[in-house]
Image (cartoon, rainbow, N blue to C red):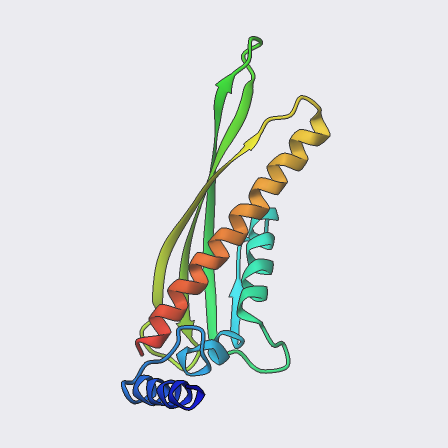
Length: 160
């Protein structure tokens, strides 16, 4: 029984490797390239958070010269949701939109895209808690945008 299972596993692995299948997160799929992307974001709190998240997601290696430059433009919109009796919001909806362009430093056609992250957070009565909730919302939006941008770039680079 074990011999049959081993033969089937080897046969399946051979067939999958022969068909040209490349995992999206595998080395051939573009991951080593991601570590050589220099990230440029706006100089504000949200831009800093997005740059931090993207560099972590890409596994940026500062010892190697970059092959690509990722430029992002970020805009956010905050909408109050729900009203208390004193006409203050009980929640906020935060929509963050990031337009990105990946430029090869050796020349070539740039890649670009737009991603949007929408989330909500509670409005607190205390000033410090309100600021902390908004910053937490921005952090979560930056993490989601980073994930979406990384997937877009992996998909685009794997097609090249």
